[in-house]
Image (cartoon, rainbow, N blue to C red; front, side):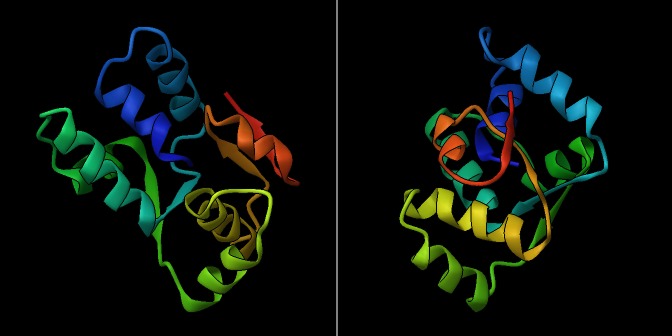
Length: 117
């Protein structure tokens, strides 16, 4: 799962929030995200002036955070089709045999995963 899906839900984004919520409900308990997402979410929410307990948010949404390992970082560095943040998400997916990403980021259409949004 990409950070934008969680962010849309938490900020009640009028345009994308309803779709993000629908996807999370459909995939509840079967989603993973990189530890990078925790940091990205912290920064985004802090800039927006929002205060959430990120651990509680992830638990409530049914999202499991997986480790950012040296192997994932190496794989991400070798991905030339995505920026580094997206490459980390992509490499995390590959390391955990995940084939579908929940994301509003069309850059994921450049690689061999299915993007839902």
